[in-house]
Length: 527
Image (cartoon, rainbow, N blue to C red; front, side, top):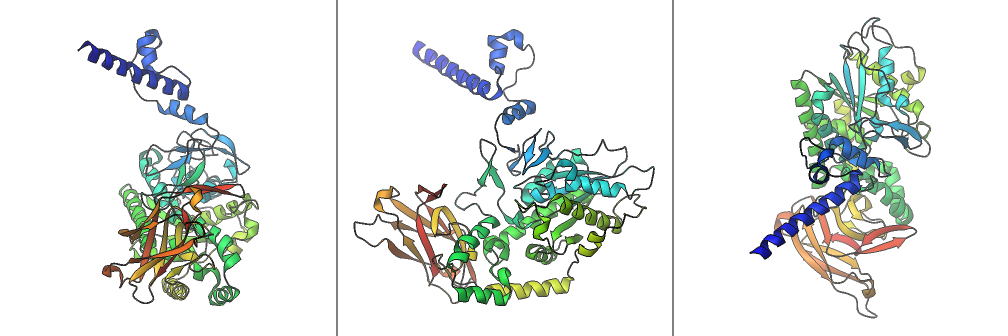
């Protein structure tokens, strides 16, 4: 019996020692256990077993990266609280919630409260606090307010790497504190992406992947376009795309809205939006939408917003964003362009009569008048989208093979430009004729690479359809092989099938200074 008691005491002391060491390493001070029981005079108050927000912020500040993980996992990563550093060469400060510090003074009593909601575009990556869109909007609006009345106060609720789910969730978590009268949402193409993950050093590293699915981002399409399409697509195909409508006809699978995963993400995005509008309306607040430019995403967004039954006022700030509008070393807007967008946004909000006591005219702004965007009518937008979708269908098919860039735009994520499968992948295959099998072409790695035994689990529209075993190639054996997997009859009449692949093993491959995981190289074909 005494042995059991001594073992229990020993286990308890070991756990306490581990807690003390970990806490002290992170926070730089003795833990509550130490202060309370070993040094009782250090802390005669309430015993707590967790770090205060201030202590956690101080610990996070010791890492070099600018990012932190929000308490709410549905928000994901955000910028660190109390940040004061250069981001894209611009001085940037954040408040205790990791949001951009208001450059203006303390809001006057009774001031109208406005929130600009979004990702790095709304945040103003690459411009300083005083040049950010939120502050510039506040400045422009102040000039329109009747003398003696309080000018509006604008808060920026945004973070690089956020999608619509992150944005709306964070705002809803802080709705009581911010108490907005008006929210201006600034959606961008990568709102359909997975939100970014933040690693232990505070760096934005990759995407949070749902188990069994790859992390997805429109940025993957750009990489494939440059590394696969530009280099490997036959000239005849490129000419056909150009004649039909350019890059729009090979829009990324995530944006196109054809495959089930794309449709699901559009629906989820508008579900988040619907919840936000409902909560704001219950508080007597208004939600509106401002797109930076009239790009493919903005036009498709408007059509699908109406299809979702959401009647939310929208505007297009400029017709087109030019290369001269960017930072030059990055695609985000430069200070001149951000100020232009703020001026146009201010004019629109005043024109809609949403700004209280805005009786004074804004000063003339030639560029704002010349470049202000014009929205398509509902009928024109629907006709445009129908035509675009029809064109996209012409160039979408049952095959993805990056040896000649066939179907590169049908890859959601997870397949590299050389066909490499890392851990997970997802691609949308279009059935032109009812298919009975999925053929997976596999270019195996040499047997000496250590990836074997290897198997690949296959999914069709999130339903498991089989597992293929990939044997290690024998000496002198051809590395290229294929395996056929029967398609369940339920899938044979579906126009699109999202094919998922999940490798059981992989190795790390380093090329030109960049490391990635790879299990094999693949091509997909419905037959």
